[in-house]
Structure formats: structure tokens, C-alpha cells
Length: 120
Image (cartoon, rainbow, N blue to C red):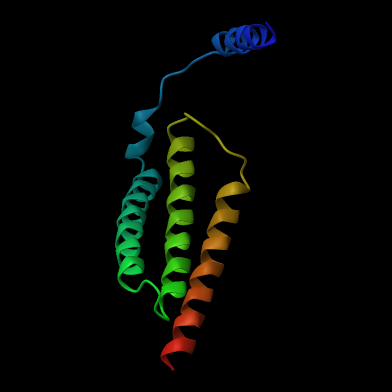
């Protein structure tokens, strides 16, 4: 009974929320178009770095490439948030995207440091 009541309350609240259409015209603006291009590039980089991680599995460079993969994933997530905010579908707090980009930059720096240490 409690589950049924909980589902009813959640369903009632969800139906009561106003819905709005996505603003696809916002993607034509230069800043948002660049965000989409960066998102596509980040997805390609994620796929390529995942393949490299598979190739160097267990090697000395595997840790570096795992860090690069996580960095590219964070870049993709931050760009997805930017695109969703531009489309007015989902707006995350303003501090989330810069935080993700900062962590991504730190991970790339750490990955480069690891690679330099291994190869030197």
C-alpha cells in the first residue's frame, strides 16, 4: 500500500510539472554550435582512447591512457550539460561545467606527467 501511495504521489507531482519544447534554434548560435562540435570531438576522443587503453592493457602507459579517457569523458559530460542548457531542456547549476572542465584539465596534466615520467 505504501508503494502504491508513493507511486501515486510521485506520478501526480510529475504530471503537474509544466513542460516546454526544446529550443533547437539556439544551436545555430556560434557559441552553441562550437559546443556541439566539441561534444562530437570529445565522443570521438573517448572512443579512440578506449581503444588505446585496450591495446596497452597491463602496460606502463595504461594508467596514463585511463586518465586521458576519464578526462575526455568529463569533457563530454560538460559539453552535454552546455548543449542541454542551450536547448533549455536541463539547466545544471552554473558551477558544474567549470568544475568539470577544471578536473578535466588537472587529469590531462596528470596524464601528461605520467607519460613523460614513463617515457623519459
